[in-house]
Image (cartoon, rainbow, N blue to C red; front, top):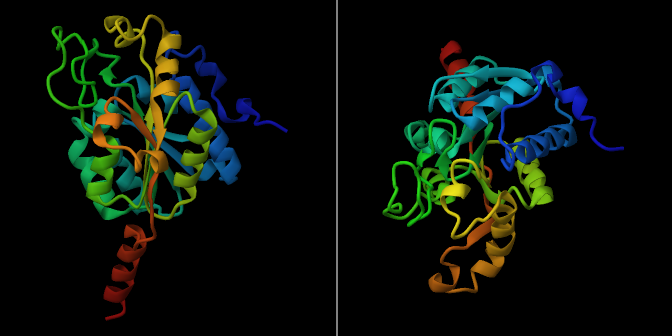
Length: 273
């Protein structure tokens, strides 16, 4: 039997606002399938977002949901998790929401290792607010604020998460739908802070400004398909061979002390004095 998506959607909120060619719907369905596979109690799932195209996802999902301010999704989610550690926290953020205005929260959430899952819908652009350059815009690509091409290397979400201490870190693309579902599932069942860099496509604000690479939204998916390299194969290549490639795979899966459990131990220790 397949997943009954109707069970997990607020159909009264349809139709959705995402543009034709946007892959946020693909990520949403992968998230639903991962939650279904994990057999989570709907009443104990909380999906949190900030601001941006990705932030509309909780409005469509029939869980406990929280739509917060720009860049603060992880901060709100941390408060929810500390107040009720039995809840399953899933945060969905765009690349701007997660690692630009929310960058400081991102670093400290990784460092705390609080038990929640962050899915970064990384489409390399501020899609909702006018197509401005984001931290992950590719070097040389055009946006509304880099009309002559973006200067500087993009922020690598995976390397940032690894450096900050996240205990589960993975990356895949919206083209690789089975892998995407698998990594989100692994992040959900992992005990600790999980980051899934879900490389996504925004043709309206990004693709059509960069037609030297993308003639259509299908080209954006084909780009993901043709330029993805598994982490095991990437280890055998030199940096020049990997330039412009999307390295996919699980980069870390380790068990470390979880923040809520350590906090609870401290509270009990103080009470017993």
